[in-house]
Amino acid sequence: MKRLALITNTAVVAAVLVFVFQSCKTKKTSKNDETLYAREPAVVYKTKKDYSTYVPVTLNSTKTEIVAYPSPKDVFYKGKLAYPVKLENSYWLDNRGIGVNSAFLNITYDAYSKLETAPPLSELFSSIIDSDPFVEIYNIGNRDRFTDETKEINKLIKAGKLSEFKKIK
Image (tube, rainbow, N blue to C red; front, side, top):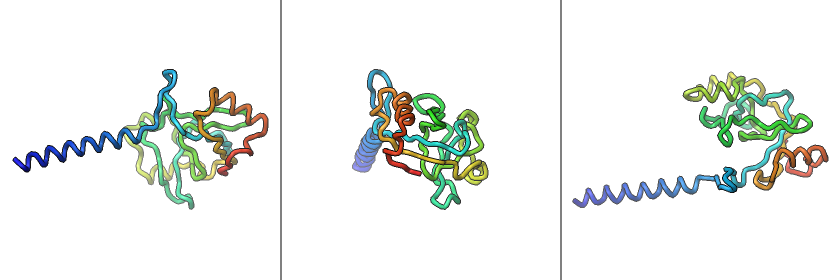
């Protein structure tokens, strides 16, 4: 009987912990029926070529191995494929998690999203089409500060004000 009570108590504690951790993990808030991703950075970048349809991965600092890559179910942003937003002067607004060590695969968002599972790391690494694709990358603050982010960011670009923000590369 004591063993059954211990198992039951352990199960209840485990369930509570799972609930607490799941609750803490979420970053979504709701405002006017639109899902916003609170405190998400607005990353604006320019690449050597147009890689906007290709899936990015993250390499280590020496660019010799992949340290982060999405699941095929994780290439979406707000319910749509996470293509970056085209901005003025060949800049892009990231929707996937671009950073200084990001590289692009020769796999499109569309094709990748249809895979059952991500390919093995060795296959992903051999699929990299550019391990140093960025000309510039800026973190221009939190996305939730913009009312019309594309319009407002384009205004910053046209005014030559990107340099006033944190330059990542």
